[in-house]
Structures are given as structure tokens and as C-alpha cells.
Image: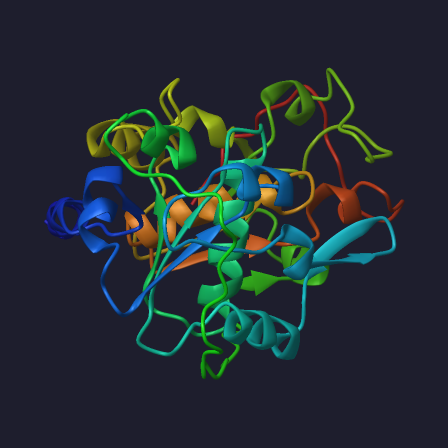
Length: 294
């Protein structure tokens, strides 16, 4: 009975999901005074063409190098960048990337950074800039924009981003999903910048791109349910921990679970394998998918 109740709540949550916004919906919002539209393409791409009213930021404003890996920037740094972009506490932020292989992941990481620091209304443009550009009737502009400085005050949520010690202590205690391609998970190939190959014990392979169609739009809610609830047997009211190579790929799995499917306790190990696998004191296994038991 409890499982049926959870499933019913999950279906209702999916029907009310707001993590991704369609190009059609965005078009109706362009004149909204609370909209802050953010372009994450390169500066060249942004100045070539972007969606009207979009302001520009870059991923290095949100991530900082730490030894061989990167981590989210400080709350003070993120607050400063959010204010520069014109964000206030009531802003509706929509983020999009252009058409490069990591543009969608930059969008999810910036969204993660904003949400971790207290912003409530953050969405990703479903399909990115390509989806907007696909309709010849939608306007584009090339002039750079700057919004008036916002007054957003950040409040860090310590329950979302976890470190290596937390991850190590929870092996076998909570389900972990790895967002890298399976060839890296199994250790058939080595991830760029990662010394040791394989995956964290008990983790399950969950390539982030499997949640998207070929055109870059999110798969249907029914398929997402099959992947996460049926395939991995994870539950919306239980903890799940996401990791990848260096934080970007896992941020998309985190965004889909927490913002679209409304998982309450999705956490992300930001350092991921570029921290974990560049050390000699962390456990790693290869060629083995260990079923998580709980």
C-alpha cells in the first residue's frame, strides 16, 4: 500500500514537473519582468546569435580548480555572479546552452549552483538553443545585454553537495548512480584526467545522456520512471547519490531527479572521479555491476 501511495505521488509530481521548459513556453515568457534568461554558450556563440533578452555567463564563474579536479565556487562568488546577471529572489531563471557536447551539462551545473545557494525558480530550456533555433518564426538577436544588478542573497543548502568522506562512508548504505558512459564505469576505457579506472563499489551505471532523445530533449516521464524507479529501484523519498567524472554529468542526473521528478534527497558528489580516482586510498572496482541491496 505504501509503495502504491509513493507511486501515485510520483505520478502527480511528474505531471507538475517544472525543471525543464519548452521553447514554446519560453516564447510566451520573454516579456515577463521576473524572467532572467541565461545563455551559457561561448562568448563567440552568444554574440553571434542568442535568444532575445538573454544575458551571458561562463561555466568558470561557477566552478573553480582544486588540485586535479574542480568544485563549486563559494557562496559569495556565486551570489556575486547571480547579482551581476540581474537575479532577485523572485526571479524565474531559464538557462540554456548552445550546441556543443557539454552545453547541456553546463546548464545543469549552473542550475545546481543556483539551487544549492537558495534560488527556487530555475529551469533549463528543453533541447537548448537548437530547439529554439529550429523554428524560423522565433526571433534571434546578436547584441549583448546586461541586466540591472540583482539583489539576490544566497543561503547555502548543505544537504545537496557532498564530499569524498561522505561518499566513502555511504558505500553500500545508499544507492549511487554514476553518470559517465558505461565504458568508463566498467573500466574498459580511462576517463580524461582520471588515473585509476573503474567505479565506486556498489554504484550503478546511469549515463546521463540516456535520459534524452537524439534531439536533446528530455525523454517522456514514463520512460524516466522506467529508468529510475523500475530500473534502479530508487525511491523519491529516499536518498540517492550521484557522481561522474568531474561534476558536470552528475549534475544533469541530479537535476532530472530533484527538479523534474522531485526526489527529495538527491545528493551530488561534486569532486567525483577526478578526485576519487586520482587518490590511492579510495576503493574502486572494475567490470562489475554490484546490485545495490537495501
